[in-house]
Every structure is written in structure tokens, then in C-alpha cells.
Length: 86
Image (cartoon, rainbow, N blue to C red; front, side, top):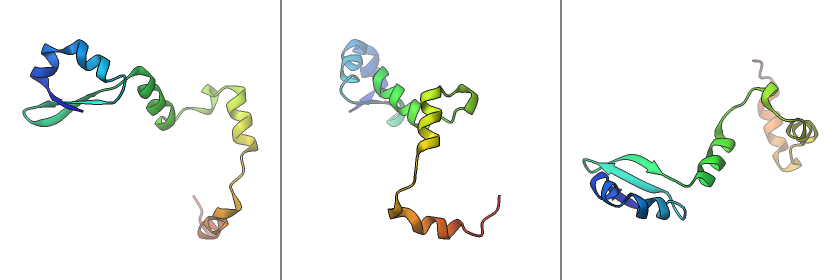
């Protein structure tokens, strides 16, 4: 959904409710400026995209990382990195 900043200001409550269903793009001078989204979507985006220090991870997450394995479907990626050094 896309709405002008003037329309948003006149109907904040309506767009807060709409943002529970889908992000609301707020335009300024006809160009995208801000996006209003639900707290649940924001949390999903942030948790999925933000790097965290290892020290900040809980034990369950650390155990899941340690036990994770790459599917054999992606074995060719190992070959691409065979001679790579950091």
C-alpha cells in the first residue's frame, strides 16, 4: 500500500491498522520516504538480517549452529572455496 504523507497524517490510525496486514509506504513529494510496518514484521526483518556478536547468542542458538550441516545438494560450493584464503 502507498500513501502520501499528507494522507497519512490525516488518517494515522487507519494506516496503523493497515500496517498490521501489509507494509504501508509513505511518500513525500511523490517519492517513497518511509515505510510503516507491524511490530511483528519489523522483528522478523531485524532478527533475520542483523548480525549479532557470538557473545549475544543464547545457548540454544549456538547449539543449533554447531549442529548445522550443509545439504549435499550444495557440495559444489565447497569446490568453489577450495583454494580460498581469508
